[in-house]
Length: 272
Image 1 (cartoon, rainbow, N blue to C red):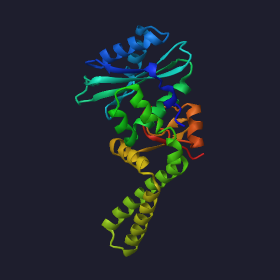
Image 2 (cartoon, rainbow, N blue to C red):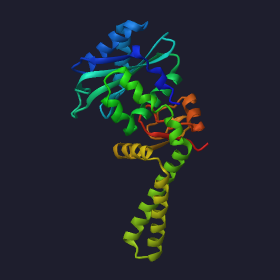
Image 3 (cartoon, helix red, strand yellow):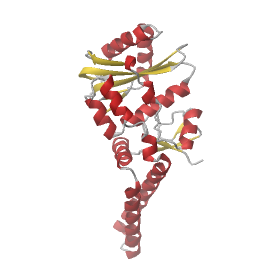
């Protein structure tokens, strides 16, 4: 089960947030979280801002995932904010970066593993178009809970282990097809054309075995980032070189669910 779904409780869902930019959103979120949690609004705001300086937490499709770690917090909490009107999240960017929905995470400074695992699961959840479309239509906790409850067994549905293997094979087939297409363009050899057709048939077979939602997510990542898969090599993401905690690596090895890199958003896999 996607554990983060059970972490989203009514008290942690804020409706009709009024903000004009990222800073005012962080301030509003911090004040609301401080009412139901132990850190002060200033401490929460500072934690969000500190993380944001590293890299934007806008993950696209109208969703942002601001997050921060606070010394002595002792747990990991997830908060959801529905904005009354969308905002341009990265106003200092030349591009428009609209955000209408926020998943915010607060965790203990001394427990990065739990924090990163929750973050990775949120990335996975909101990158499923079927889910995201329905979530974006919700406006309160009751509607959100109904949508998320329908996807509690999402990882089982996708049979993650098989799906990841199929995605790896799909990438291999694409590489071979491109290689033979290039070869055929410069060599008039019937043999290469026959091999090319065999690889295309093999690719079609793989595509027929991949869940449509997994495939759409894979294509979306590949279109935006060039590569959709990232191997964990020496406890680092091969795509962005960010360290992956041991707990997350173990989750990827178990292949009970599709886990995405918390930093670059690519689908993680291992070969050990």
